[in-house]
Length: 125
Image (cartoon, rainbow, N blue to C red; front, side):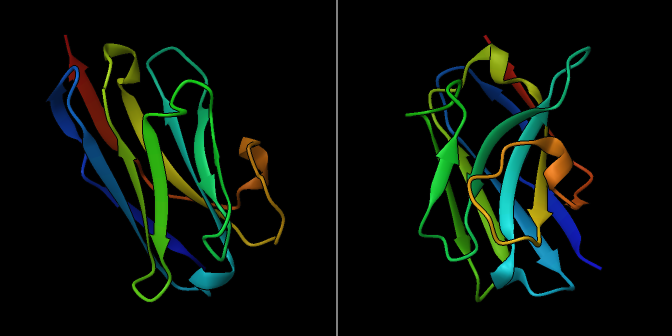
């Protein structure tokens, strides 16, 4: 089984940047597509970004395109999400997820098999 643990969330001011980290254990990290999702109160979980198993391909939601960068280090079993120019509407619990099926892009929630517990990001105006 794959365990995912997010970190890096917190309270930040609008206009600043934040870097989230997701550490994976178990499984073969280098073969998984990794995704980032977020869920705001009262809203459904939404896709933010994804990166292919090799790291060569990335995919972003329109809401963060141009502001977010997803990257991974397969040697360290870690995937990162950096978002700049943060807005109050970026406030949410951010989750990382892993998909063991080698296909890309992967944006549907149900295609990811493993999920972390999430890390809260709150952006104040």
